[in-house]
Length: 203
Image (cartoon, rainbow, N blue to C red; front, top):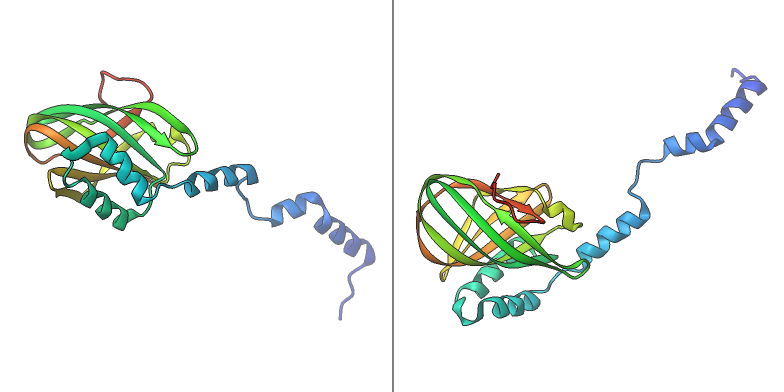
């Protein structure tokens, strides 16, 4: 067996014990404070009963299908950790536009006003005005909401006059439930763009 010279062995042991070597040996981790903050936000989710009460306060008896729609979304995605109550209006003649304003509710970050726009394109005609109730999933920081959320293809529902479709960006999923008045016929593809301030330019 070949012996390792003592000076070389000592140098190797010192290098292995150095802080730099220990740092390189450990995998990168999220800072504890940030990880705790994110865990707290996700843990502060809304139960189905809480969401049902909030929806009743927002829509009253007008939303016959709201409860069934909420049950459907909960079955798909579980408990949301935020929701938005608001109103929107829009219209389309092949190219469509949608503008909305609402109040974001979070158990951790409280309430704040948010705005959204929704350009779209497709065989879509007419106009409508809607009251909206949006379930929000995996929102760790309110600032992460201010982005474009494309519609998830193939995820649209209509129950008792209440419509819902899914929008996703990364891990964040938004499910706007709409109870509207007006006339609009057709289908489209597009996205929702959320912002902290009102916008005239929809893109």
